[in-house]
Structure formats: structure tokens, C-alpha cells
Image 1 (cartoon, rainbow, N blue to C red):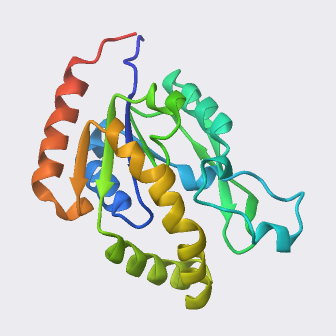
Image 2 (image 1 turned 135 degrees about the vertical axis):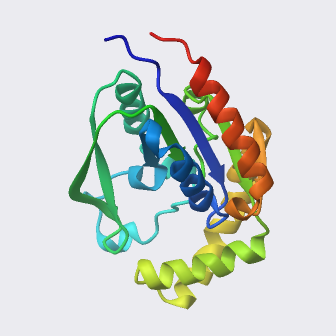
Length: 212
């Protein structure tokens, strides 16, 4: 049976801008079409060859922190209706985990991450490019809560990292990718009007996608 090319949606934005809430909103609507979410955060480079102290100095908000070659390879596999083994990142040990997640190809691929619009190779694979735009004060509060609860961080370490790396990297690399977006969504998943417009566009594309 001939299959349609999967639809690829890229969702970018600053750390804790609300990318996940936008992703979940899309997922909930299109789950009947079969949707897979590929998080760029899972594709941080393996650092097992480095000492723990060296890993602590890694700038996770810089484009070079990501293994985009592997990410692009996996997206190509999914576009060809082939399964992948998605890596898992250990935020406590600051390196790639030995765990993997087996992912079957789906009709809709959501690629979500702070810098998914930075790499031209990734942009060229996307049918829809989204930037979630949220004020910096809201993002830092969300990041403090997340990193303490989910990643075992202290408030001092989160703030230090934000000031030394997250904020300057956002201004240098993340914010400029807004110009590549087809749609900019202020305040993430709370913007119901933007989500409704996006859902309508996705439905139109799914109905008209050419069969390969």
C-alpha cells in the first residue's frame, strides 16, 4: 500500500516558553491520525567520554550542544516510514543515557525544541514552522520550577546558568530564528485563537498531502 508523506511540524521557542503545551494541544487534536513527538532535548550530544566536572561546563543552549546529524537521520527514517530508536538524555549525569525509546513512524511528526529552527537542514524538512514567544520573566520562573522538580537542580545553579548561558544564548541563537517561523504564537498553549488557526491549517495539509 502506498503511503502519504508524514507531515512535519517544527515548534521552537525559548526555554520554558510553552512549546510543550502547544505540542500537547496539537497531539490531542490529531492523535487519531497517529502522531509522534521528537524532542530535540533528547538529542544532546553524548558526553560519556568527559569527566563529570567537564560535563557541568557544557552550554546546553548553544547549537553545538545538539547531535543534529543523528536527529536529521532519524527524521529521514520516519519520513521513509521506518522506525527509530530515540536516545534518552540523563540530566543528572549530564550525558546520554543507555536507555532508548523505540518509535514507530506516524502520520504527523512534531519536532520540538529551542533550536529546531536554527539548522537549515531541519527547517527544510518541515511543512509548518512555529515559534512560541513568551516573556523572559515568565520563562525564567518556569525554568526554576522545572529544573528543581525534574532535574535535581538548586535554585542558585539554575539562576547562574540562566544568566551565564541561557539568556545570552537565547538572544544570540534562539530569538533570531523567529524570522523563519510561519506562525508566531505568543504565550504558548494559552493562546487558543492561534492554536485553532494552526489546527485548521494542519487539517488542510493532511487532507491534501500528496501520496508518495
